[in-house]
Image 1 (cartoon, helix red, strand yellow):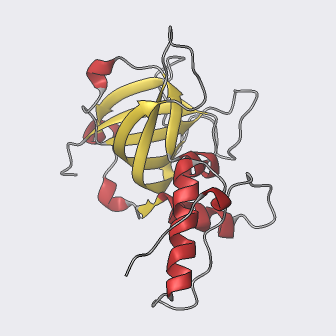
Image 2 (cartoon, rainbow, N blue to C red; image 1 turned 30 degrees about the vertical axis):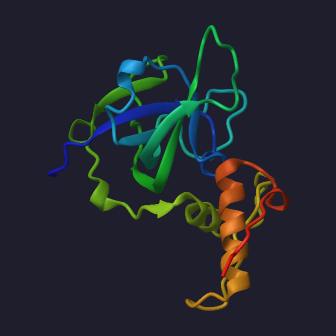
Length: 188
């Protein structure tokens, strides 16, 4: 393994669908000295939380994301105890790391990918809207959160209408709003 990228590891009860829909993993407390010090975030499953959403085994790593930035969480607004959203540009599903979590009850840990035994080249990273669509396709018939689905493309070459609908849906997923709230104007 040749990568020495730094990573935040988080212990979460949120599902892959939820993480993709909000654009990353959130509600984390972290000191600002950690901002900009890691390029990846690895999500490990906390099945002992009463609101657990994902089916993965307790303690298993299930998702790795490339970090875009860190912004205030959209779920907590207590200024005395700020929490943060680690936004991702792309993510990949991890299926080969059972019993991964080993850091007790503190839900964040910082390390290198080498030390964690993770090589990002082993995983198929996709933009979050595409990963969300893939997860939904593979779990048809299961309850999924009410977030927009990306439109099906009829070919590799998109029509103007398909391209605009795809862009609107991608933005709606990224921003956590209804597709109807997105308007796109094209000037020629």
